[in-house]
Amino acid sequence: MLTHTQVFSSFSTDDIEAAKEFYGQKLGLKVADNQLGGIDITLASGGQVFVYPKDNHQPASFTVLHFGVEDVEKAVDELNSAGVQTKIYGDDELPDMPNDSKGIWRDENNLAMMAWFKDPAGNVLGLVGNNQEAIAAQEEMARRARQ
View 1 (cartoon, rainbow, N blue to C red):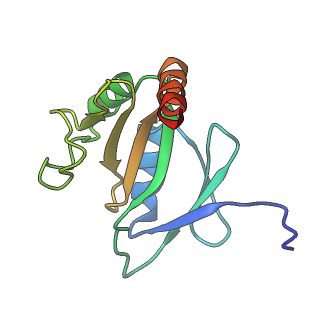
View 2 (cartoon, rainbow, N blue to C red):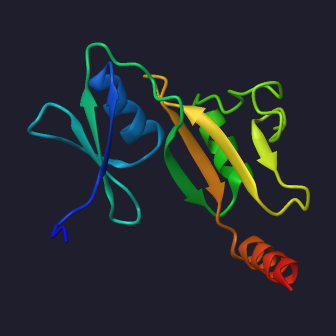
């Protein structure tokens, strides 16, 4: 069995200073220089993410980090007013998850909501609604489906 003291995620960037400004100023996260030349980002949950410089960086083809938020619409509006674009996918790119003009996807019951945006290096980040009422309704629908 693996004995460990810490678990963290990591991903690369092509511009560590731009990443520091984006995650620290635009997203309001705690950012600190790392002795390896990257940055450590501390999340609200206490978790950490290590972002490291990579000369031949290629953005990930998947969402590297999701942020659980109470109100996706409000979070999208805040990001947009900070200059962060949240309409990054056209309906042809996500045919099973069409999103509105702000880039917000909603399930057919308007309970679950998600949105995506990119950091300066092109890495995709996501917002996921963690509205407790919506979560309870989804759990109830799943329970009924199992009966």
